[in-house]
Length: 163
Image 1 (cartoon, one colour):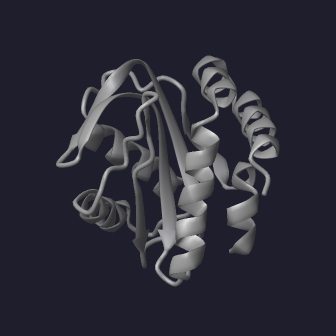
Image 2 (cartoon, rainbow, N blue to C red; image 1 turned 30 degrees about the vertical axis):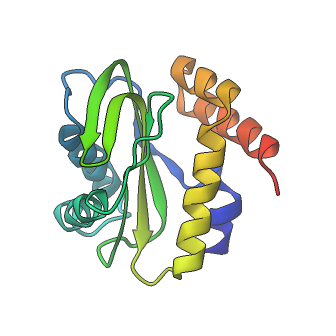
């Protein structure tokens, strides 16, 4: 699981990428849709159980980080291995919670197994946040139209934030 911290590009699955979140207007719809993609990819044994963990985490603090980016995440026994689903909405999704929010165009849903150590989990979130703060990465993520191009953008971004 340590690899997850250093190589984000390896845990974004092609089956869990949606470049056209058409018809979605609220964060709950997107979270549920992306969780369904992870379940179909075989990395969750229960999308609904994982979504409940994500919603519980949403009550604890913001997962919207300006720049039109959100990274909802949850730790759950329903997660079989650490993975990330990616969704993009050209028009944006209303992404609010008790801590604020805004319009999100890039959404990274992070699925963490229950047994992952807290320090590793926090490092994963820090690393993703650092990547998402890179304007060049965000611009690329808004433009790419294939899984391969997304992963190439992530890899370039990872080089920018190497410790």
